Image (cartoon, rainbow, N blue to C red; front, side):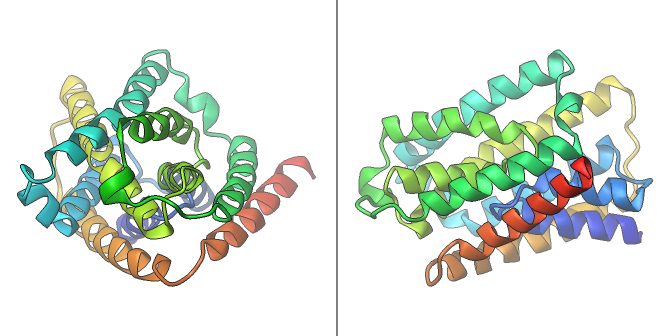
Length: 252
């Protein structure tokens, strides 16, 4: 039970912060030698995060007709990473990227990129300047998030900032893009469970969905409040320190 709660907390907090949820789940799971970190639980964790983001942005979802162009751009932006992710899984390349060395370098390098992107001058707003070109550019760079340590939200925020959106709008773009991606990951995972004939659904799955939902929801809420007032420096510092520690562990 403790393992499930820890995994849910990690997923809920790190999925929407620019620090990489996959790398933290890998690192914590390996370090603590978790026994309950399996496909079924991973699917439940992503379902919880998906339910949280659509709940938080429920007004945009409910008023779909008013926001249909925005959601079309969001859908387009999520297509490249879904296609790339499919081929990585199909050719069994994912596991080759889930190493401490890879996570160390990506955590460090993309932490620096996050810092540099946050220095860009603001000239654009989500409501008026988020066009198809912006959606496609952000979508292409989202492919990098398939590598643990890059961070899906981190690369989306970085590229959005480079495209001159303010921190709040860049974060909102990241959260909105997470909707179709988290939905796709959940559906893909459920399909794999059905294919493997592992249809059991326990109290652990319900708990992981619930806690992932709670921590995801409040992470979105407080991160948007935080980013409206402060820079991304705290996440940059965290990434650089973590990256250096991991690389020292690998090379020394």
